[in-house]
Length: 197
Ligand SMILES: [Ca+2]
Ligand SMILES: [Ca+2]
Ligand SMILES: [Ca+2]
Ligand SMILES: [Ca+2]
Figure 1 (cartoon, rainbow, N blue to C red):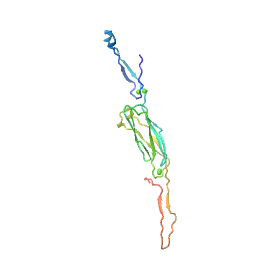
Figure 2: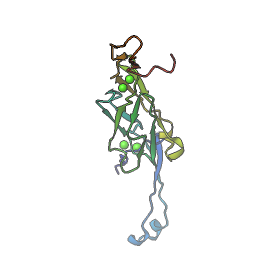
Figure 3: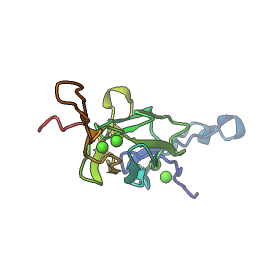
Figure 4: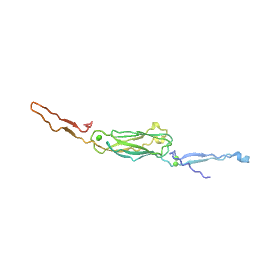
């Protein structure tokens, strides 16, 4: 008899043990001696070929304040035994359209696309600026202990600035008269100052 492992898509404890039970089918034999015999069972050791993991692709994004957005995909490498929920945290400089991704036993192999948008502030910053979107498995919401222990890759985002610091004086002329008309001009900053200044 040939024994074949069931090639599933789940990471399991390896090797796993399973037992093939052999019985004499009493109804199909006319031999009362063999009807009474219980043959030995076969204990099978199954070595797993699945490695759980979370693929984040790509792990970089390029976005521009008030301009281009970018995307990355997330997908599981093996079938989970329960829901796997991945949280993605916004930063001050970049946000995502999906802060939570849920992978189930059915959709685990379908990549989910996340869109990254730059925060369009009013501050001139070093450009491009780098910010990191941190991905974590929400252990409290999953029934899969293997995925609970996995730390997915983070996404490094390059943010291009669209602000130029400057001081606007308007108008830059004034007309006044001795003993008579006064005139005015306005002064304003073109960008917000940094809170740390
Ligand atoms: Ca397999
Ligand atoms: Ca397996
Ligand atoms: Ca801006
Ligand atoms: Ca800015």
